Image (cartoon, rainbow, N blue to C red; front, side, top):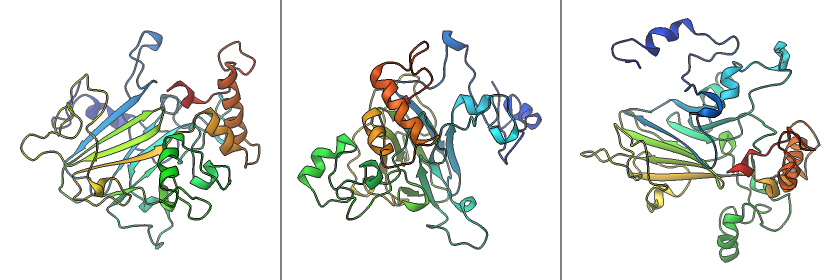
Length: 306
């Protein structure tokens, strides 16, 4: 326990904690008790919530416990694990000022915060990047499967013909998956990881009650146990990219890459630490040989467990 306002607990101790590399300031991570739990975020779904009174320019990002435990040390620093442990990162709402050299134009306004799932390449949790790449550079739409019916009915809609007009499904500087955030405007963000991918929700909480579109999640509190899904986002302004700051409800989905999708995505790439591992992890999952003692032990596709 601790208090930011009174300066005790974590606030008192964090000055003595430093990362051995990088420019990362002190972070918070929940500690568990191994297999007996709590184990942090695990399948079949994970969720994080952030309520901010003013999120005009900031960064809300998530790292794996492995990265936190090993302090982000890479093989170039001679870490004993012999591998880069920065193996997963999701940046649901993040500014772009540090992405580019000084005096370089930003991809959007300063108060546009991007959603990005490709900040850390991983052979464990594949990412789509562009829609054309996710569909194996083919001239037919097959991935992600949850969009197939829509694209069959609306073949010329945005994203349904990536061979004509591509879409960056992983977000970042080359996409438009971003939220404009006003200064001194309360927002509540909820990030969900499930079998369909990364869902990033943003609500302007009710001015009198603090309620949001997810029952039990409010401006100043959240229930320990929640209903499985939020209310459906119906505001047109919240169902498109470049979400404006005054939109009361919004959601951005960045598709997952389960085994079948990962195989197709990897088929157009060089066999390397990322895409070779993605393909091998997909085969291991489909063959059931990823577990300890299996023929492909260590090869993983984490999406297969959601």
